[in-house]
Image (tube, rainbow, N blue to C red; front, side, top):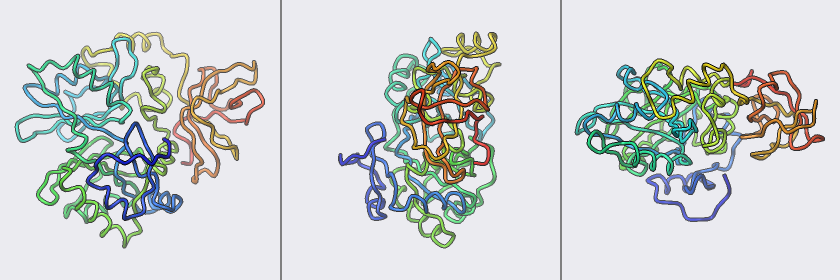
Length: 377
């Protein structure tokens, strides 16, 4: 993420976010609201009440036709076909060699023309996923189109998120398992409201709303949120909360270099992301081979750095016992909850929780390896 003055692509929320004091940054070629002038207050809103954000860092596809769910099912690591009504799935989409093209959420539902699947993924995964769909989704069984501009995504996160949404939508939003969803109406449009824990492991929801209703929904969140201390939050705050939750993000902690088990095994996401009982999917042989071998050579770990400055992406992780580079940083931030700098990064499997490492160089800042998610966060 870098500061930018490039004009943003059209967004139905651009005017209201500008009016709210948004400061802009760029993620994968798209401008996102980085903060609204008080990042500390934004963080506290999510931890104590609720925060809401335009998820311009995300992208979406829609699949429809004869059998869209089965076509996507053959491309992802999880079992979409066995998901009960109202339950989405989190999964990875792989190359034939088992490398990660995207981590995504997929939601099966009935559209106006029949069955459809909504796919939500990081913007960094957009181009590779588009090429993958062109290659592997036969038009006879499913059609697909990018839906990022037609379907706006707004996140609402925090302990009072369900209360806020219930007031805005005029219907109770129930407690749901992660990736489960409901489809209430707002201003005559059907929404998809999916449960998530990515923002600091707080209760949260991602709302997929037709672009025409996005501004009205945002205004309602502001109106109902102000009395309970809810406020707009930016991508910078969401990144801090994501890192505290120990959740990997495509484009930072997961790339096409990554085999999914490297990211998911120690982060506690294997059961959520990978089915070992489903039928064939692209890249499956690599995942099964690793499962039979019993381990991978590196894992995504947490790192506690105390008062050191946040290291940049790809900063080396040095094993002080031999002075060798044994991994690299993927994400880092100062954690208000833990009162110190924290990071995630890939480290060789012998660097287990409790180990001490150096960051950047043999004489760089000291860090302690910990399990994910970060305890106390």
